[in-house]
Image 1 (cartoon, rainbow, N blue to C red):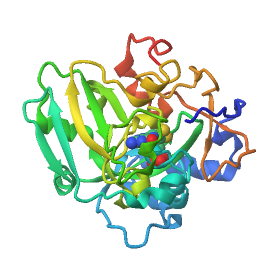
Image 2: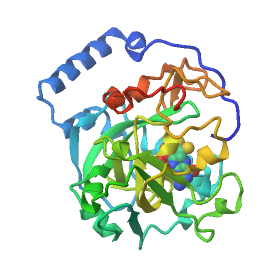
Image 3: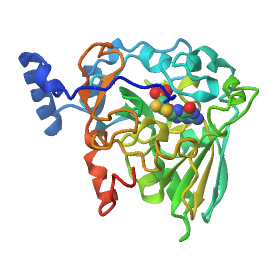
Image 4: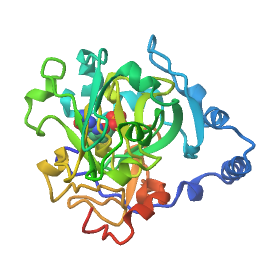
Length: 326
Ligand code: MTE
């Protein structure tokens, strides 16, 4: 997201158009089997290639039930790619910085304060968050505004589960996510690349959408530090920067929160930041993307889908001009 120009992508065919026919046909029958419910969610991830996903030695395992309603048909990104190609500016701006320098982050003990326009303000620790609702595994696409994407098996539950518990009052219109900003744990906080703490926000109805995942793990384990340990958000129909990492406060507000990227470059990063191939970033096209670990630098890019393929969310934006409210 740094101010580097990405090469403009040429519009390219869907993977189905470039996949060998036999593979595509078997994928279609696989999709049919899912449609008739003959493959359970867990089996889907197995078939999608879990065996190829090595995990971190010694990381705490999380037991989560695969939720087949939230599984994309794409191949999951290899664990190594998902944990070494990161944006987490609190640890530096290079993609490898978070995995190189992330070890200083202490994900335990950890608390999240929940406050603002709610009837039941509370502070919850990590064990409380892990027990707040049954953990689910969901395979989501994550599309970064820089033009790359990944497919990650996250572990968590709908943020709506937590929202229900704190009972927003009639004034609550937005939810603000404030993340950790501690110089001792995060070497990048000394830099002025963004205003710290990194803050993100959603409209209350977006926060309540079942796709919005309060995320505590990935690949069957707790989150690695570089991916936002111990708790982050994942909002799969929005550009990746809306998915705030290492959250310490969730605040319900009347007014639209002032978010880190919008404050730094309002003409480039709007509040909504829905994935939209029809609205280009002022300095590059958003029509296509490169899948990390699959599409080499010189490979043809794949088409970016409206709302990153999560078309169900369109109803949240009826009557809203998505070009103006980008
Ligand atoms: N959260 C914090 N606190 N700091 C950050 O720099 N970067 C965002 C988002 N959340 C960021 C953050 C961006 S730009 C992206 S694309 C995603 O995290 C990347 O998530 P990943 O590294 O797990 O793929």
